[in-house]
Length: 344
Length: 280
Image (cartoon, rainbow over all chains, first blue to last red; front, side, top):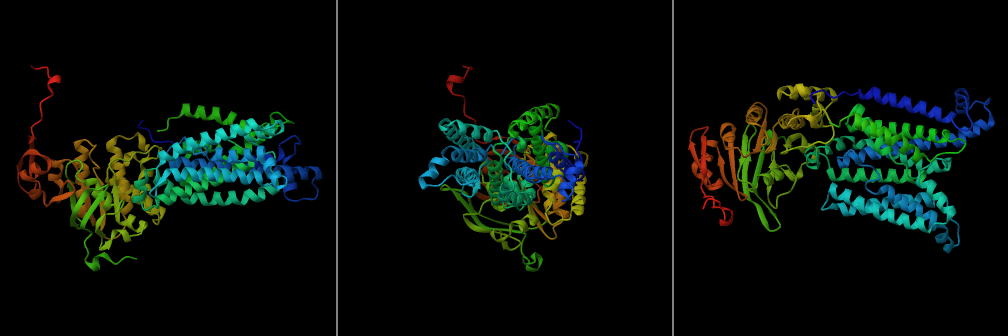
């Protein structure tokens, strides 16, 4: 027990992760049923006229938006996980824990199953934005309900927050179950695919909505790094250190709820990123949020981009849901790490 | 920003008829005292006397129900959070940490944000050396013993006000109660040095009468939310006061540093109920 902690220096680790993300990205652009050379990918990206037209279409309209969406979703999930774990002072806390993911799921499933019936009352078809908006609203409602329950007299009790999260998860899960029960065969297929997570439908219009939001969240979150560090010592101590504890907690929950809601609305339920990425970062460079947050975001992006690449290759020309791939890679990897390393 | 403390001639801390009620019960009743930099003041009193409540009010975790607390002449409620953090530091009784920060990272958590990181590293190093925990710098904080954790926490708390100019306030809530006597005395001696050599006024809640007698420059004696005595250890730690506050039968060899021998309790301990007795 007397040994010093062995840790990688944070800045080189961060740079390595950035380079890793670039490599993953390039590989993701060339990989798929239609294999491309790296030079070909480069010609297409640089706008060269010598590039093959079909290849250009594949890269620009299919793989590039998918890559960007995967990276953004991965970063958002990992960052939300890291922040919530800091807020709860519990390395096992996950965005799913406070019920945000299941709230978003309930909203989205509601639109899939009931959307046609609801909108036919008004005499229109289901609008394209209905699903993301519903997922969004579901995430926000879940967060606000939990927040309302857990906040009393201007202070938030973390234990209450967690317990409320469990209740919301149960309620939203039951609601989703009822809707699944009501769904017809076609809806069930959409629903299943969606609930296992996928980036297959990524498109530029999708990105135009979610990318700016996710980018803003990604840039705003690291501003909470210092207060989150202090919060690890307890709320009273964070207050003594001069932080506005209540506002920090509020900002943390709202930002991570929005990020998770946005991520779930475009990619379905993808687990493990928010748990695995921050864990790996803590094991390698430590627990200081000033490094943990950006490194988790980069690692989350790498993880999801790589998992998506695998999802496209393993059973080609068919495609695995990325949520399954993440669980299959993330689960065992995480277990091995747990067995090899003590927390303390 | 604030009025210069020295030009106004204000005390470091003024507690002016402070009361605190909750749920109809008066936890503190018109407490009044003031504190200068350089004083090591020990706050004594039985469990439930109001020591922790008083420290919470002084730390601005809660506001008094009546009365006013002023830091450097300015009401505590008017200080901005970041400004206050540079003037007063608080060390809680225990500070559990689930994540494996290293000891030096824990100390660095106390550094005020505007401090350049190079200065910050120097401060952390100075404090680790002064508190004799430099050998623990790269160890994981949760793996340290209670005494080691406490010294690292003290370094963290001091890092917060270390480079602030002018008089500062340090509050400790039974911060040494879990330590072995060697560490208790060592830390208390360090606090005394700190108070004397930096412009820091210290208020520490404590249960150890001999410790208070040996180190305090001043003792505040609380009972049932009232301040019963306030003065040098030789005056406050008298046979009568210890009997009145703790119901203790103490022999006190009076002097500047009174020597206290506790002979027993004044109130007799009741016999066991008949059903539990086996001696008759």
